[in-house]
Length: 134
Length: 292
Ligand SMILES: Nc1nc2c(ncn2[C@@H]2O[C@H](COP(=O)(O)OP(=O)(O)OP(=O)(O)O)[C@@H](O)[C@H]2O)c(=O)[nH]1
Ligand SMILES: [Mg+2]
Image (cartoon, rainbow over all chains, first blue to last red; front, side):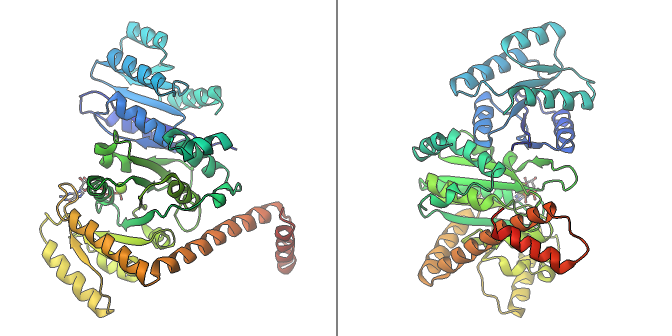
């Protein structure tokens, strides 16, 4: 019945580099997914509203600014308040291993460091999707 | 599903969003046919890639919001025919409305249907109408033939052009020129806008088309008030002269056609007859009559 995966790729934080986010977005598209791309400087509030309106199955964040802890905890809290905490969130960017552990404890489902092969990202995301079993 | 519908009727955005997905995945379920129309005005925006359709939709939303209208947007980008995937990026230009609860933006892939518009768009419009938006703005993909289908879903079509592209000749060839009810020359801050306008006027006079031409700068909002005024005027005129009704009837027929075509395609896939053409056709008709 539902085979199409909808993914929101957002770029929170103040840094202006969205190349990585676009590369991942294109890879997901080429893997047959619908990628909603919202560009730079998204606040957690904007991400949550977009995720609701677009009824996405997954949310991916690209964070290079170093503010990942703050952004992710805010986002997860807002998602809960809005009753969409069931949507898996994954993060890509420059994230130290210790922080990655923390993020996962917090509820982030996957953390992709720089240089993660795109094929790995695609597979993980498909897996995450099948786990929530929409 | 019933539950979602109840909640949607009470104004719940999340339920509306979920129902749209449901419609996209279950085109056979015709529950939307039972929903009453609340008279939303449907405005289509089409034009070549990069002409500024999303930016213009963004600016039009701002204008409509000033007047307190509730606005729904359907933004369509191409679905890859090879992978079925899509990069839906129109939203990037509409950020200023993300936090406004009276604005609902939904991105859609163009899907695999021949006409380029996602087939479920007919149902999604009905749903958004029933939800209670005053205006539904639709942005089409910016390439090829598909623009033509926008006339089947809209009350009014705005054709977005931009100077220096030489599109008007292409449009003239493909018949896209005819589908616009209002022409917008966007990016009129760029050089050549006036020259472009006079060329457009002379091309249009060749075919005796008399339609409003409006210059805009979507990124600053210049000319957008005039555009919205023109849209309303035309809606009013079309309401009075019966054009809206005519277009609605055309929409219903096209919708029925798209459902029937899908049924035929599905039935064809199930039949293994390739020897005799008339036999194949009769089998398909039989199957459909049995409502399989
Ligand atoms: N100078 C100028 N640039 C504009 C104007 N309107 C849009 N743009 C720019 O043109 C580019 C394309 O704008 P979009 O609104 O994305 O165009 P589009 O027609 O929606 O593009 P597709 O959906 O990809 O076909 C962006 O970089 C805009 O900032 C305008 O009035 N003047
Ligand atoms: Mg666009």
